[in-house]
Amino acid sequence: MCGIVGYLGQNQAYPYLIEGLKSLEYRGYDSAGVALMNGSLRVFKKQGKVRNLEAFVDGKNLSGNAGIGHTRWATHGEPSDQNAHPHTTQKGSLALIHNGIIENYETLRKELISRGHVFESETDTEVLIHLIEEIQINNHCMLEKAVQLALQRVEGAYAIIVMSKDDPEKLVAARKSSPLVVGMGDNEYFIASDTMAMGQHVNRVVYLDDEQIAICRSTKEIEIKTIEDIPVTPYIEEFDSNLSILDKQGFEHFMLKEIYEQPKSIRNGLRGRITPDGEIHLKGILEHAERFCEAKRIIIVSCGTSWHAGLVGEYLIEKYAKVPVEVEYASEFRYRDPLITDEDVVIAISQSGETADTLAALEIAKEKGAFTFGICNVVGSSIARVTDAGIYTKAGNEIGVASTKAFTSQMTVLTMMALQMGKIKGTIERAELRDRVKELDRLPDLIKQALSGDKITHLIGDLFAQASNFLYLGRGVNFPIALEGALKLKEISYIHAEGYPAAEMKHGPIALIDENMPVVVIANSKENYEKVVSNIQEVKARNGKVIAIIETDDRDIFKLADAVIEVPKCSELLTPFLSVIPLQLLSYHIANKLGKDVDQPRNLAKSVTVE
Ligand code: F6R
Figure 1 (cartoon, rainbow, N blue to C red):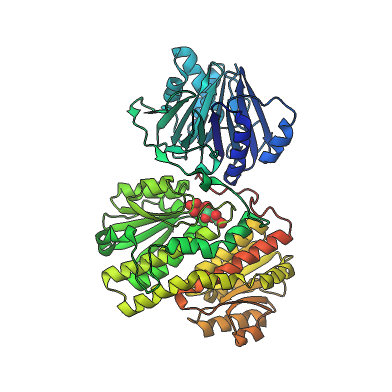
Figure 2 (cartoon, rainbow, N blue to C red):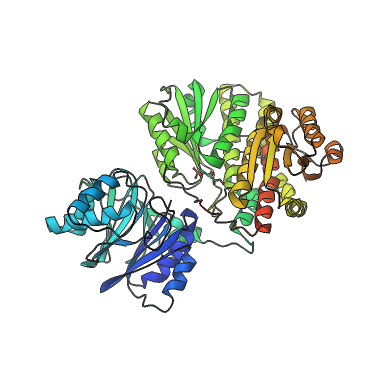
């Protein structure tokens, strides 16, 4: 979490920094700060969102051609002005911003205190700036050397940018397990956690690798070394800065815009991978057909919404490719000495491609010899780069902290993977494969139709917004959708919600049902339809309020339920795509009705780079 940004060039740094920070707020919004160089180093920082910082600096001298900025998701120390970054040294000659966690900070802090250092914040980050200063003074060395030596003593994760009053034409950046990219324009550098924060003048980028340090001087080409001082030839990529433009395009929130973008984002994911007449050509699988066909087992590791997509993938891969699949929370997998062999394929699913637990799970899988495969949205992200192969979801930038379009794009990729594997292994009949692929090709249009039910969903959201608890029920491939619906609601509305397999209700949750409990039942699937109807009756018998997601014209459930949201008829394969749309909209409208901060819900961050 935390977003970092730096600018060095001929223009004023502050406007770039502040715009960069706004586009990085999805990574954390507990406090924000900037340091600017103009003869002296001036630091401005404030608790709360970037707009608080803007109000705080209003009327102050913000000049300077170099600067760094930070937006924080608090780990060590509460959100406060004091704990906000940038951190500076006692002499005020250095300033540093950091994303990550310095795990051995207690040891380093004690050491530094014993040598007379005085700390001003509760953060782990502050030890690093003290250490860099001490090393520089003791060794009379350049800033980059001091940074290298200090980082050699650090355990944990970091993406940092450091600037020095004594070396004003330079920014030094480094990373390990937290993302960092250096963008370049004409005689100017933009450094950031994400290309979304790059100014419109950037035309080339370099993604730093773990334990690399970038030295950016205003009039020279970028220099990259390892923290052990081994020179690295930078791999410079072309960059289209138009891709980083963020705009709500008339929608009230990014989340709503992203929900409505799903016909397009799914179409982007399908393009070039399937044809309307039923052909499938998924390069990521075809190039590694042997590994997938011979896999004894597929293990999917991920977190949150991406984990729910993994559960959908489990149903589909087992059904069409007949390979046993296990879906694991990456955070559990990494700490339980899992039994993995070189005959396993480990798939990591991640929108951001930076989730710390998912990355760590992949490392373990790699150590044990498994073939690793990434399903990521963010191009060039850490997971995309460390895996042996992978497929991009192509959902486009997702800004709303609650994931929506990235989820349906992950399911789209998993569906294509299951079908492609089935084709290679011969576990799916040709005719069936053709039919399934043709259905997939219709999916964007069906999603468009599902979105047209938004008015009803809005009304239902308003009706139920005062409830304190919600239950979500689904069966089969729609059980993960019940989990996802519940997660979406709690994330943005702060209403307690639970997702369950519908048949599990009678094993416990049924005790919760009374006239105050809305139960959202996913009933647009024909598999186990009668059983879902029985579940609805069980809820009604206990005076629970049923909101049912049904196929168009389902008169039976229409008569039974308190409220229904219709989605278009489709094959079983596509039901999770269509049922999740009204659930995303329902949580959006409830949260909005309650006046919550839909795009930046409390305590959350989009990219979870701490474990
Ligand atoms: C929920 C949400 C989170 C993420 C989770 C994993 O709306 O966004 O639960 O799904 O933090 O993130 P990624 O997919 O980036 O690994």
